[in-house]
Picture 1: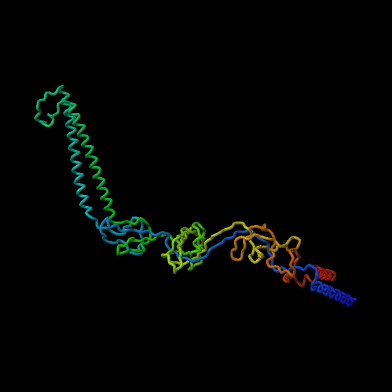
Picture 2 (picture 1 turned 90 degrees about the horizontal axis):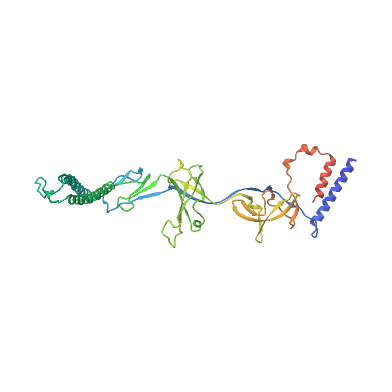
Length: 411
């Protein structure tokens, strides 16, 4: 009995296989063939960054120049050397002044003379005021000569004396203005004297001291680090100041954050028809690092475009034909659907989708289609790792026959 049943099942199976092969291989067969999907995944939303990668070197964020002025005086000596650390207020070099000391002495003498004249006028005004009291006490002025004060006998009345006091006060005021001007000139000379030692206005490192006195005679690099790199003629138009950037020093595993602080739209070297133009740019670090110092080479990644919460798919899932881009979706009913999309930026192996997907669909990555149809059922490879001998042995003969038959007739 068992032998007959086995023979019967074998005949049925052979007939089903032969019938399906005939329908499949028949050239004019209208049977709908199933697609083969080897990989699939759920579409997600996320952030996408478009970056530009290049190299750079750590340098100072600012360079300060100090100049020698021949009109101030002749050069005396440098007070610093290359490599010195300086702070604001530290002396850099000295002048020999041009007759500043002689000018100062002459002005001080003029000031003393003016102050003596002012004091003499003040004494004279006091005497004139006391003389008014004498005139008022007599009641009248009798033109008698006062030999003790011969200069005062020229005044005929109180009014004449008051006029003289007024004139003396004007003379005093003029002398005071003259003295104030002389004091200001002396102050200016004192300021010039302090310039005989030229002081640094910055903190930093002295990187250049020009003993031939060609300007700038002293160059100071600031203590704040920056990263310098170069763009070619095409790249310089794509980068803007303020773009985020990441710095990767070659000596360690650091990943430092920063931004583009300067893009210089003039080539590093004089423009030439023979040579390619390179344009310098600078990155400023968000935080200083003690492991970073001038001269260290770095990798640079500048974020030129950043998208937040956008639909992202693997780039290999997007197919293009006749200027149309599309993907294949797995529908809830178990079939494949061809969906047109509008692609955005592509970063490495990821593709932005602007339109056509919501971000919660299931995506067939690289389906294989025996027939050119827009909607079809599909098959997937057997995941043998999910099948165990124990689960197979647990099936009854009726279940085995049922699943075998279903597998043959399932389109």
